[in-house]
Length: 152
Image (cartoon, rainbow, N blue to C red):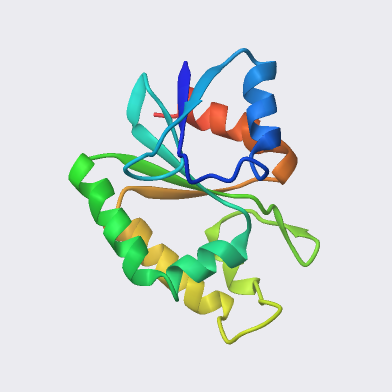
């Protein structure tokens, strides 16, 4: 397996991810990706777009909606599948079991509410070939390798 990491990923933010790749002897390089943040060159139509938490994907779904729409259209043109890997596995101390749990999310600031974000993400899921996966930050590297290496 050889992983391509999007060059727009901040090196400080992905140190633990890269360390996991190195620990598992997975080759990787950094270069700009057309869509998403991570791909396995052996399976380039499976893409991961990493989000540091629910707040980031909520921002993408609301304020950055036009930009995300363009990215999802590029995904469709490619005929690819994208996993949104969200680095948050709990809301108010309770484990996240699925996308529906986003309805319980309440931001610290602003008027975005979890139910609105849920409806947008659900619409994306129906219209595009996307899935949402939640994980703890300490397991992000392992989760990327699992999704790029074994998922169909």
